[in-house]
Image (cartoon, rainbow, N blue to C red; front, top):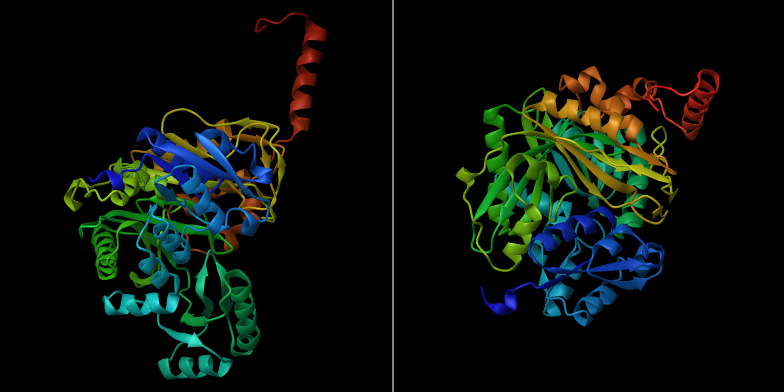
Length: 487
């Protein structure tokens, strides 16, 4: 490896959980880290975890974590050789990736031209079709509701359908349509959301797969044409089209279907000339056992940790190596999962309404013990500001099989995790993993919607009143009975 491609210091263009995650691996590789922060994040966990930290602006993301010029300047002035974008913010911004490379810095991610190509859902779908990857029946580039009506008649497509933003992601700009009368309003809603979220109101429409399951395949490629998959993840449990629980391997697939979906992902990656880490997402129709291409995420995924746990690999470390022109040190035959892993996203949200919850974390207890991995972006006493993503922690558990991984997750959520000062979706996550249909592997992307009332009926949220009553009981016991044997 030539010296000019050696990374000795990296700027992490992110905050919170992803920034801390990248910092851990950089430290393992003896690479110095530079954090960036906005004014309200000056005492954030990712800032305290890094070797250096640079202020890049005020609270609004466009002034700080999305300020491309300031971030590149900070990397150059602090003597970094590379930038890792984590996930979210600028991770899938082709302009930023090009700006990083034009500045003479190493971009730790896939090629900018691939990011740009896959960021456009219409072009991505066309490339998938060219690579002989099955796609959902749909109409690309919708302008009027008459276009949709005509397409449905010609292709004999029945309701429901899904109108979605071509430049979309994260569940934004997606509207389900149940009848012909709803089309004009749904079209305008999707167009408005797309423009607001992505600055691009180009839309497409697809057949809506009822009770679909969200399966994604982790891929890795080096710059020498070697591409492998690290098997699949099940990401079906979602709220508002956003994932909150993921697991690997998927309980929805048998071995034949697993091999087919994984090698289809590799075939598409080859067609793209892909390198670095990425994820090919599919929608599985459980009735027909057919799967359809959704999109390619040209970045590190939030849920990459479950894949690391079942394969024993460090995906972030491999991203660093690939960026430094190293070859993948293994072939497809060397990779096989030997455990089951589950991840839940601890979001700072009201578990009943999903409204953001922010404030100071007055108490924090983190789970420990066999089979538990934590990726945290907080500490006790830290502030959770209202300006950014609500994710504060990833909680992962493993076991020899799915039942064991669920059992460990139950222990972690009930006996280990305690967050006070803000609300989190912890009670909802516990209800999900204890639900008989989840345990049996019978679920779809509408699981929370369909079982919502049942799920929230099981909540038992502990409050500070519980603690006060417990202390009062001890005081009363000692006053009435004198010193106790446990004292």
